[in-house]
Image (cartoon, rainbow over all chains, first blue to last red; front, side, top):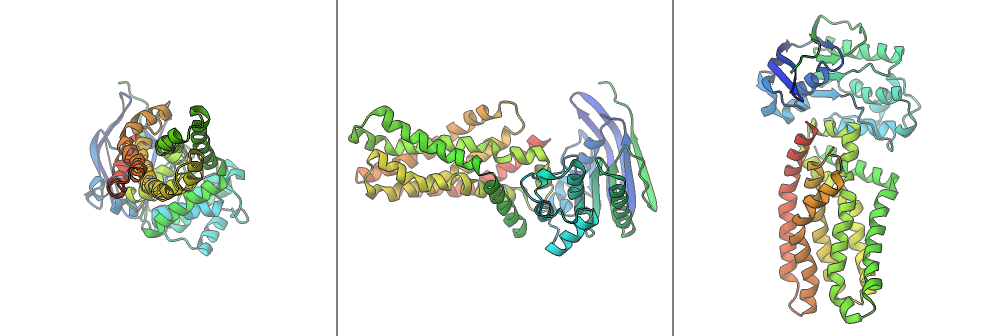
Length: 210
Length: 222
């Protein structure tokens, strides 16, 4: 489904990686590893179309994502480093906004269930301002529970700030998505245990000199 | 798609309501700047009547500058902008929705306040209609053109001052035509031509500015 060919990324005069390619099919999991500054986030942003690679191309169902644009983004769920959570909105409102932007339907009942699944039951009406870092991350990740129909998930460090129970829950969500035939790309420093038929791994090398 | 646009407008209005100080500041700035002129220029009715439309328009222009830097900055800082760039809804439409919400919060109050402030300048009440109408057509243009500057200066240090330098010259035509509308009525010519021109500005800006903003945002986020 997702295919990257000969990607090169140069940031601030440094070549982060070059000649990088992968091919990800339905039900496959891709973990991107590497040290800080090795270009994990850049690679994810390139795969989403937020960043244009210096060279190479990313294809979704054999078409260049830069010509597909909205058609590709409809099939994509991206949870970035930043949680995209507004302090002045409640947890439920934040989730509803994120889903509306992604074009995912989330009526009140399903949204409550998703927040409950992530262990936020009872916090729906609290402004995000009073939530802890981990709870904010959970609000951002509650989208996963509502995005069964979105084939490609791209998750940047999904497990940061989460406690063991929440990590377990997110791993379970990812495993279920893979079993449904979805594809997941993620980065992490933790050793995640996710049941997947095919688990690929890319380790970005240490920082290259210019 | 419409659901997403409704959601963006609703969200921006809710955020504004929960953070009222942000837009009340803009409104008070407008009131104070306009009120300083009669105090500074002196109580000469003829002179005040002549400068009234220009002063109100310039103050509206400066007040709209004040609010612009916040248009995308908060969304950029917390990652919501990335989600907007990756939305299934075309970015230009989302930008248009944001600009509309921004105008409702920072532009519309100025339009409604203008006749009250015009009283300080002894502007004839017969001209209030044209003043309000010209602002009603002109302030959305200021928001739309300003959004281009806000998107271009996103994430830059000292972006606020640069934003004003970029956007103020672009707004000159709107200022000339807008302030000219009331003068035209006062001189007995009628304001129809000015109002039609302002409408043309508005239609053009509404049709093209959001897409320019979308391109600028994609560049800024990279």
